[in-house]
Structure formats: C-alpha cells, structure tokens
Length: 152
Length: 152
DNA sequence: GGATAATAGTTGCGTTTATCAATTACTGTG
DNA sequence: CACAGTAATTGATAAACGCAACTATTATCC
Image (tube, rainbow over all chains, first blue to last red; front, side, top):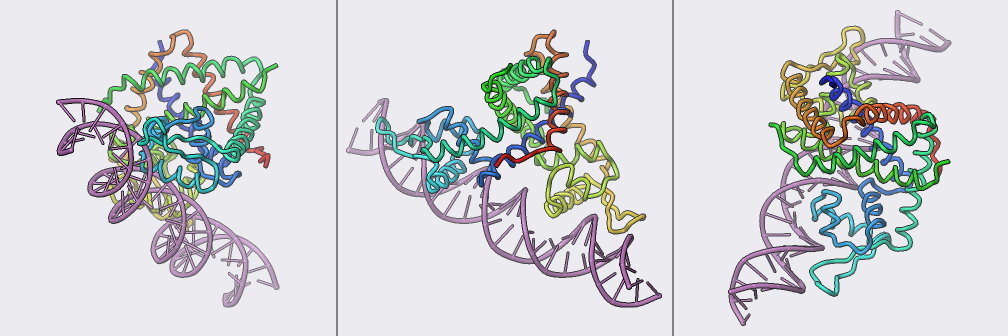
C-alpha cells in the first residue's frame, strides 16, 4: 500500500519536470525565433493537416480568438495556409506551408537531440521502462481528465 | 538499439503530457482563485523558506522584475512575508504567512487527489515503475540542462 | 578612508498575450 | 423567407513579460 507521501512526491517530481520541459520548449522555439504557442500550432498542424481553427483550439485548449490572431501571424510570416472550406464556408482549413514544415522540422530536431541527450543520462536498461511509463501516464491523464471531479 | 522514431514518439508523448499538466495546474490554481505563477511561488517558498527574491527568480526561471511584482501582490493579499535581510540589507527574505501555507495546502490537496485519480487508471503493478521513471527523467533532465549544447 | 564598481530589488515603459463581448459571414431549420 | 445556431474575426480591456533605468546597500581598490 502506497502512503500519501508517494503522491506528494510525484506531484513535486512532476511539477519540476514540467517546469524544465517548459523551459526546453521555450529554448527550442526561441532558437528558431518563434514563440512556444507558435511551435505548438506548427506541431499540431503537422500532425493533423487540414484541420479547422475550431478543432485546433480544442486540441490546444485555447480560446478561438487568441488562436485566430496567432494563426494570423503565422499566415503573414508564410508558415501556415488558411483557406475557407468549400464544403462549409464558415470553417477555415489550416495547413503548413513548405516553410512551416521546415520550421517544424527544425524544432523537432532540436527536441530530438535534447531527448537523446537526456536518455544518455539514463541507464540503457531503463529506457524501455521510462518510455512505457510516460505512455501510461499520458493515457491515465487522458482518462482522468474526462471524469474529473473538482474536490473544492 | 533504439531507432530515431523512439525519440520522436517520446517527444510527442511528453509534449501532450506537459500540456495536460499545464491545464491541471491552471485548474488547481484557479479553483483557489490564484494564478499558476502564484501557485509556483507558494510551492517553492513552502519548500525553501527564507529565500531571497534573487534565488527564487532563478528557481522559477523568471525575471526579477516580474517576480518582484508578483511577490508584491502576494504580500498585499497576505500570503507572503517580505522582510529586508539584516545580514545584508540589499536582500529581502521571503516566507509564507499562515494564510499562504493554507493556500498552498489547498492546492497541494487538489493535486494529490488528482494524481490519486490518475494512478487509479494505471495498473497497480506499474505504479512503482512509473514513479521511478519520473524520478529518472527528472534527474536526467537536470543533468542534461547543465551541459546543453544548442544545435543551431 | 573615500571614490568606484558591483549587486539586489524596485519601478517605468513598451510589447506581447489572454479573455470577454460584439460583429460578420455562412448554414440549417421551421 | 425569417430565424436560430455556428465559425471565425475583431475590439477593448487587463494581465504578464522583458529590458532598461534608478535606488539602496555592500564590496573593492587605490
């Protein structure tokens, strides 16, 4: 049976971990001259091309107004294509330009090399376990988010 | 030998994980009526009382000017004590008030219950492994941050 | 010991970002 | 065809960040 201290510990660990990754993202984006939010947009658009602004806002948990402005910047700088959907012209269809894909690839390369670096600090026999654990956490947090019951 | 795809995968996993935790932090803080930054300050002050503004800014990777203002808010709302250091009066000594500790405890309780919830979604025999993996990641990222070599 | 450099913290100011409300454009329904 | 509903944008306000200037205090150098 795990004592409560386990969860306190994990919260602490996770909090610092997330803070570190936040800084990493900042570096990874800023070394390419863009903001963290922009890098998230590029990332998500590369994963799911031809998505509507609406859905993208859901994925990133952002207000559509904020996202609309950010997308506007990315369109102006030639990273993103924004076209009205011919099926339903209320929607817009978003996708990466060639330049946007290149930008995304740059950031991804930075992240990759960083994670390779991180994993070098971890014993090789633990790599499998760490990867599996992150996937487990991710799945668990996804499930948990749906049935969240605010305790206050 | 792990293929490159492993790192792409882990980056993706970690990115989503961090995004989820960011939202959680927001909820955890907002349910207590404060901002995420404030909750980080409370958290860090509870961990290391009687710290200087300078060091705190380092820990949180914030500009001292931004932190100074945030601390000012927290002093005004009775969460934080800010006193000049008698040893060297350029410094200030920061600590939590009773109310600040209570606030921190509330947020911690929220986080704890959330993580308990998350762990319920993970098979019990994996709990140990997940916790160990998070600690490994944390240590590895700490080490890696010191010797970071920007690839661009 | 006194002038000078260095450090911690605060404040001013411009830029960016988030959020709410209102508006426009378009689609589906009665 | 009028009207409700939805997607996206825009306007206005507030909050946060980051840089630079400033104040107060301490350390250093001659």
